[in-house]
Length: 506
Image 1 (cartoon, rainbow, N blue to C red):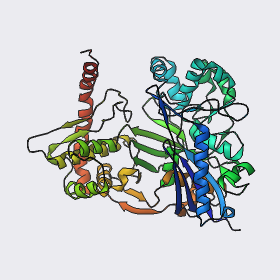
Image 2: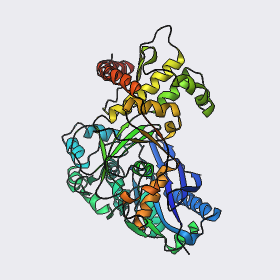
Image 3: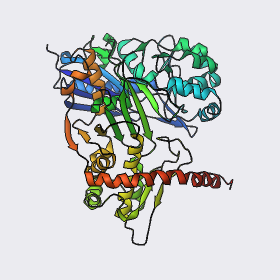
């Protein structure tokens, strides 16, 4: 029977999705299930690994049963999932403990201590990342020191997507985009052995699986897994990608110098590059889906939460709905950049800011309020401020390449136009909605030889609309942006005082 379809699986932190695509990347159907997070000890976030597998299997089974694809028509499967964290197996392929997630905070003190050591700079230059409590490298050290008996029982350490792939194929590997979040020498594309030795955990290297590329064949669905999934045994499975890289790839950011911005809870900004350029700036690097490319990213801590705060606290919205955007959008769209002389710094997250600068004390600020200021002017200022944060993250990227814009905020025509005007770049909006799953499906298509390379995969992407910058508006933002940067710099002393005051130290 002719192979006509691909399946992209996206195992997020709170939701699991199995999505059916045709060979041209057109989304056909989606099955979804809740992914349960177990919260404990205030900052601990874990998941039951077997429960995740059973939930995912149910999604794939429903997708296969729904049609129109017969199991024999599935050409390949690609995977993506939440990244980082700690997922462990013993020598029998059983979970050693519940998975520790990327947003877990138990290793915060360890990270704070490492940041004060010279080793931290070596980690930043070698692994090309900044350590977080939920980084796999951090959690391996925490695991070794705090749960030595479980650590000793552990045969394999990897991350979520790679556990799912093991359950499908019986093969143990760690895919490069996930491994590169903290455990690789990013330039050499191999495990960063000197870092493990310097951290006092050299034995952990024996627990790390063989590395695998995103478009490599990771194995085929086993008889046992096929019976559970409702698929054919022998269906090939690709290496896949971490979710943020998969989203960028699904949007179309696959060629060198292409850019993707995810306007969601955070404001992630990625550019595809061919060479790692070591620096101590607050950038995060990962290997890309294709072995010879990398992704350089800067993620603002908060994007949409800035807008949601205004709608909730100033507009009095009990719920953030599409109707509310329909009401406010036409008014905001008629305003000029900096309407009413307002300027907003979008650092509203309680954890401060991480890009394009790191400051855990940073706080959001609204400047320029008068008695004549309206709530719609405040909303416009907040949307402008987030757009200037994106512009700030993209400052180091030469030229005016277009931006593939995704995430919940990309649904707003007003915000799309603001970002185009503020950055001076075309903004591309994709047709597909499940972009992480689509990126996973693309890795499967490349593995299966449906496309020779990313350069020949243009037909896989469908752009719904292109939003072009308006020259006069871009000129206004060019005048505002230097003031935005000066306001950030002058606010640092206040941020430091504010933190000390709230702690009772000032």
